[in-house]
Image (cartoon, rainbow, N blue to C red; front, side, top):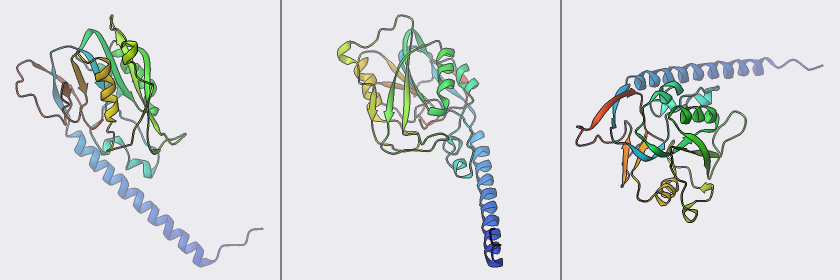
Length: 234
């Protein structure tokens, strides 16, 4: 039979539980305030009217976290996010013959495939980014991320000599920042074709960019408005 806990131990446990509850409430308040601030960033972002045969996208996926510690790591704490429905409804500037490279987080894989289909692409293959350290996860601690590849129309695959290995090994950088190697692979596969990065966080030489952290185009005469939350941080 288990002996009853000493009175001092019970008091300490009550204090610890009360402190945990206080931290949880404070975390919820900070999270709610952050979400409210980010929600105010809703905007209509201009997207180029020009159509592109090569597209790279890292959508601002919105997904729930299920623990106090996970709340602080929510994507909403780093950039405005979008629902899957809103992402799928975007009219992206894809040419009739085009290839799409779409980043997919592990818990959002099925949703990413749904978005790819909604955008008019058929899944063909993927690359796996193997990171230098694990992150969080509900079933396993994720140490990889997928870059899905979809095609539409008569878009050809890269020439055999330009086809990369399926694994990218690169260190984790800032939150949601993707490895340089991914851009190099796309550029090597399609060196002469126009390219655009959707949900971009910066402008890359030789690429068009779209996202709310990208400096605006100097000439907006050829732009049209598309509503939605557009982050970036990808």
